[in-house]
Amino acid sequence: MFDRCLRKALSVFESKPSAWAVFGLCLALVLHTLIFVLPVTAQDSREITFSGRTPRAAVQALLDDQRPPEVEAEIGTLSQTGDYGIADYWYGEGGGMTLLRRVTGGWETFCGTGGAYRANDLVDLCGLTIADAQTLWQQYVADGGGQ
Image (cartoon, rainbow, N blue to C red; front, side):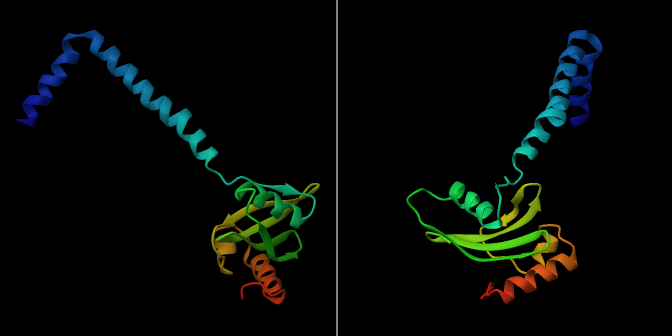
């Protein structure tokens, strides 16, 4: 049965050049979607960074964007070692953590979560080296974070 249907479908292409044209247009549409539309969608889904001259200003910019204006936000522990920083925050019923890095002219958030990090998340999720992650996490704990 399948064999017969397949032969009938292929016979359309043998007898009509316009069928090949329709097939080519469909193929072009699929390729266009794969090549041009999907990468733009993936790029738009990247995490948005927030910048500031200090680590606290970068975290505040993140909070100002995330929370409704009538909800108070608070930055908890904010620790910094070298070119990296980590901060926990909360507002209303929610909160989370964000990772910061030093950039020209200040700091920016670049890896955040609506929950809490663990030390290995800094390597696995955010791409820090093990040495940088350990140093930053130890400073965060020493500053009273993670309790």
